[in-house]
Length: 324
Image (tube, rainbow, N blue to C red):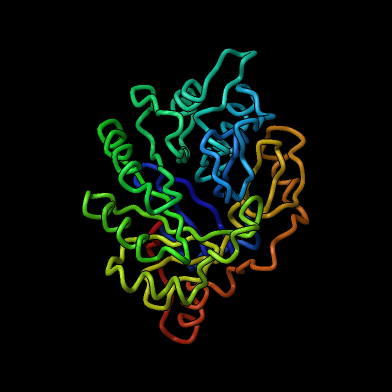
């Protein structure tokens, strides 16, 4: 179990199960990075013209094999809960000098760290299923008409690993098609679905008209009739949504690091501070005065904070289970 004293309470995390527990009687003064997303490469063959990270087939990476292994090991030693590897397309990452591929990297990390290690892939190029250790893996579904194709890849993955999730991008003009695609995943037993919305950054700047607002998202979720879905931290969960909302986390408990080692408060920010060394101490230094986007949702306005205010009003204190 990993734990950290936060302004909302003692946050305890069990990497093996993904279970979270918040003890609101024990608090800390400050946040620190607990969930870290690392874009290990800017290369991607899929060519989405709405990609928020502006990934292309010519994308590059500043990360070497030894840097990634040493850095993530140091994050683990310093109590970071979770590291997600993304991109670009992480499967395309390689260190030619060290003669190491992405599969070498995740297998090595899986042996060395106790934190929750995950990665997100589009499935392009084809995944080498036999080369993936049994770690949580997420598949991206960027368009509703990709659902059948992504579903087949998810089934192949499920034959090799225990936990397969779907990151599903909502399109304002295609909500009916999105609903049908999500039901397709649900009916096949894939209920770990994270709903994402179009972000006005990178190539996505030309697709702001497809961004679904909070009211529209709430209405969409209600029509799905499913309460196991997860929602992007960029939006406040609907009032009726089962959630452990702690704000968006930007430079509170979450940071994003690019393929160029730029530390950002969230994946959609354009500015940040460079990581000078692949160490936890350097990461903490990089988070000082890290700019946040105007849409930052403070933990003080989150559902958990509102719950705490109700507790102080006379309901009492205690431990609360959080769902991922």
